[in-house]
Image 1 (cartoon, rainbow, N blue to C red):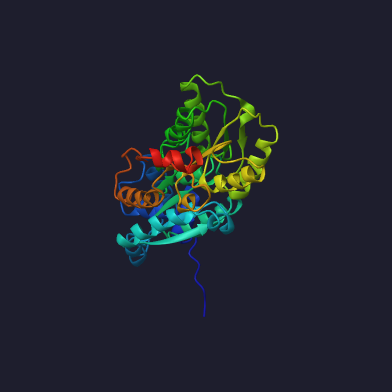
Image 2: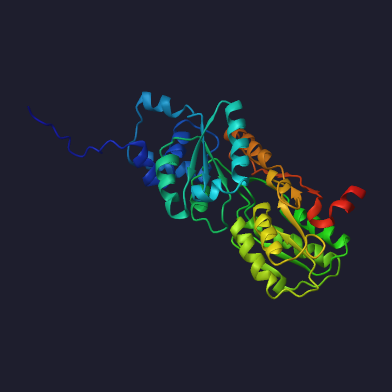
Length: 355
């Protein structure tokens, strides 16, 4: 038996190798091969040049397979499983995503990875063409994977606004206006010294709700006092610890606090009560989310309602619609409405019954 070597022959490349040489995903190469219109001209030219240089010719069977969809959507949440399932916000969003995906003939591949493992997800799932598009939930402003996804033209929808990446399609609520609604309510009740507990500074949702707090104070001519703004994370423990820190130096004139999420507010309630303060008589509290737990605590929370499950549903609809859209189509930004739900944590039972 002998082996015949062809001098000057170019080794047969795989589609994965072409993708790596062109610095794009496997799915982008597939879209170029199938003349899909959702590829930018400069990216198409780069991929075609690599294909020509490498004399790449996909097998007919592989090309046929590449033209089909996987009927799977990726859901990337850059958080630990413990953080996700201890916060009731996430399960409701996931429920909206999975229900709508099922109705439209797709299943969802959920990945819960911290930032340092996002590259593995990118290489194995996205470049492996295991999903047709991606939904990202709760992305930090400095998330390192986002620039790569944009450059790779990954079909992508963010749940939540990103302040610097306007070219990405998003689904969100007006967090700034929602927070302002809650603080205006406190001001209308006569409060002037209003504190706030915000989320992490590297998340747009936290920035927007903090800005809404400041906006409402400015509208009423109330000075913004930095010592009444405390940063924490979106957890019950975070709300508890931040409220404890806030109450220690708290002037007796401070009569209300706006907390950036319901889970944080549950922790805040506990801290306030441990300090012997009556709610709302001595310290009123308003929050954001209107999750079911807001009605289960004592007193029930005044909170800004956001359609949490609908955020997930709208993200799926937007992503599937964009899978068939032209690459020249501008990004879509869907903004869902919020409204304030007034309960006993701000006005008390007797006043609430009189309304």
